[in-house]
Length: 200
Image (cartoon, rainbow, N blue to C red; front, side, top):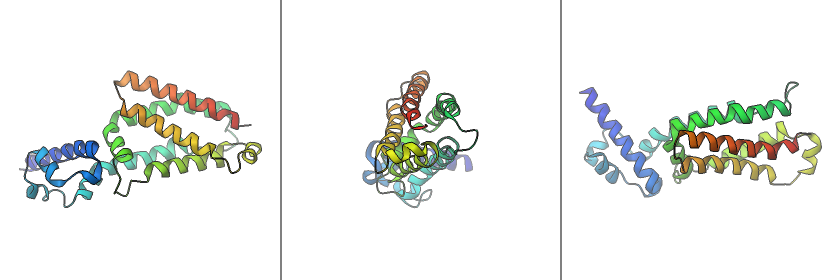
């Protein structure tokens, strides 16, 4: 009996994921998701009390993964060992690997939370991520000399948004693992070449 319940729950989550991705959170309906899952709407409410609860069951795991990833990858700390070489190595070796693994594991969920979450608590997530990256670039990466030159500039914001949108474009157009891996590596190399000029 428990197996059957788990199986139905997984069918609901799969149907909901497809529906949210094609229609967005706002336009998706519980009735349509239930129909796609092959169950009655009333039965679906035994598993999820609302559309929001259903959306968050799919989106929350990738949000927590992204939060941990941001701390691990994008929150650089300036210290005595921090230099151009360390930063370049981080962006050309470590970052592409962990970004690829994230996309491979959470591709649909990542698109769901970034592109289809209007009307949910995650609708401003892309902007929040860009702001966090921008702040970190400014506080921990850019040299004091360059900070004064970039005062009142939106360049760091543009760089942060470009990086996020680049990752999203690779995710949206995903062809296969090798294609994604190569494109992520190329994106990171492009990004780092734009950043190194602000180190000194």
